[in-house]
Image (cartoon, rainbow, N blue to C red):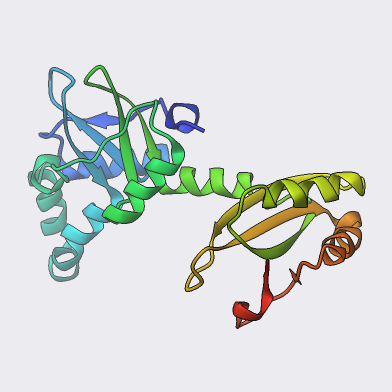
Length: 223
């Protein structure tokens, strides 16, 4: 999936000279956590999050009077505290690439640019939502796991066996098993009514099926 399919296009933007008080009001009014900062020509200048506001005002908020704090909020501008080195993506960026950027840079949102103009924003929550949809969370299904060595055709063998047993796979994802080179987890979701039948079918293939937490996965590897 691509960022363009999940980004928010109803951007709420501010200018660098917008006061923090005005920015806070916008965040609250629109129930959002990020504001894209553009100059008069529509060029991206930065991004401001509610976390940035809280961090920069944490100390004054505890030492100033209400009158003094309100005065401060009218003097400090977005341009003074916004993040200026903004990491951006395009609508054609994959969700996986966006997730990697968010994780590696420890950020919570990415402005989406097209032809040098901001056309949307994608957040960590959006990316997490795609992941949850991909693995079928929230649906009436059950997960089973098998650990297999990375070899040609292994997934096809497993899915073909489940197909032959009349079991529909609602989702299937794989990832490398940490600490075990060449071993991958296959996380398979099937309808709850088919779970026992799926486990039996996989065990008949001499696969070790995991249906609950096991601390040592090294004993569960199937060839």
